[in-house]
Length: 364
Picture 1 (cartoon, rainbow, N blue to C red):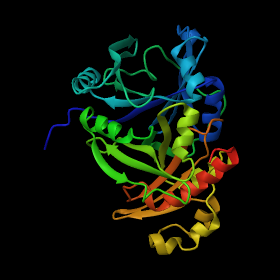
Picture 2: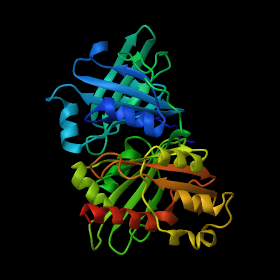
Picture 3: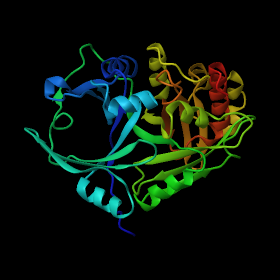
Picture 4: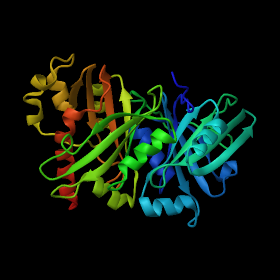
């Protein structure tokens, strides 16, 4: 068994750089049931930014806004709109993770730093990945505070009810035409990930558009990154639309696990979250396609949830519409009943749903 030079315990947090973190935090609390747990800003000595740390079970999102016009954060938001800047990985040794990946060809984003406060010390380091996205290595073993040094504990100002979101299942990146294999190779060579699965344009295509996708995973399988690129089609694919509006490569969607997708989705809808719509015809031969499932068909149909099966079981999934005005980042809600795959059987129905939205936006 070869030694994993980059052991990862899971996703530590995902940081979004946004136009208005205070208002975005309200959306995550009210619509998605996240609790506010920590804050950094002028009151804590941060002069150039404000950050809100939101948590639900093992999910931790950080929303950060610039307080000044001429900062990396402000430029990032100007260029990309609200988007993911940091995919942070929880490791036992951040400095070692940094040096191991740098020795294999990574580009540095942040040299190892030890941050200290009354709650102990925390080590961070970061490397660059596709677009302006970075991977931050976070070592927490000697830290007991609410998030990181520089942050204070803070709670939501109104009662927040969680909706059953558990942890990051996978996180998908969109890259430009011809770049997918380069970034797959980066994850293999630099981070020691393995290629898990490949989808080509025969797997993922509609009458109009197509894309290619490869999924890489770390050694223990806790971290999975599908990477998409456009493929030739008659019209503009969703990947091209994303890249056009995001102005480059970036995180397309974050898939979040739940143990009860019917309850989670019903509650999200009640709170005003919008989902892609798949027509009723999808359900007509669903059981012939996927075999027997524990759930009743009617509630799935009512909530418009998709089902797919692989050799190891089945999964239930649904996708939100973009969560900001640019047609870029969205969420997937997923419940796995044994399946390890990514819903290949739903790609066509899903992409046709996305194409209907693209057409409404005038971007197909």
